[in-house]
Image (cartoon, rainbow, N blue to C red):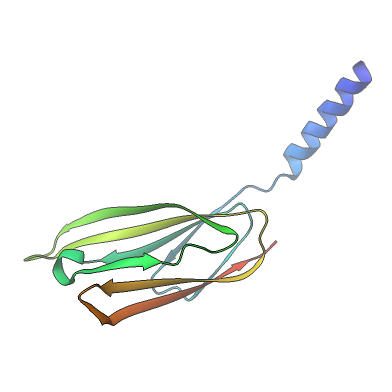
Length: 128
């Protein structure tokens, strides 16, 4: 019994010492590419003035290896007539089953004027 407890204690200590801690990786609209590791959290920040110009951010969310955790809207306050600026934050979890390169394609679109869309392709490199 003591031998089993000793083996369990040793394996627990070994696993604690070799566990990589997950990091939070931040990116903004001007970032062309990011490198992340499995288990990391990826936060993407964009500004949006929906009430001024009717544009809002959308993203393709069906990517293998990246799970969308949340989309959070943080108002930055009133910036003049009908211009409320917000910071939109997308938070992703990088899954342990993924590696390679993925592209998140964000679009800033006004539904009444889709021809004036702004696209932001973000290259996400998952490094094991």
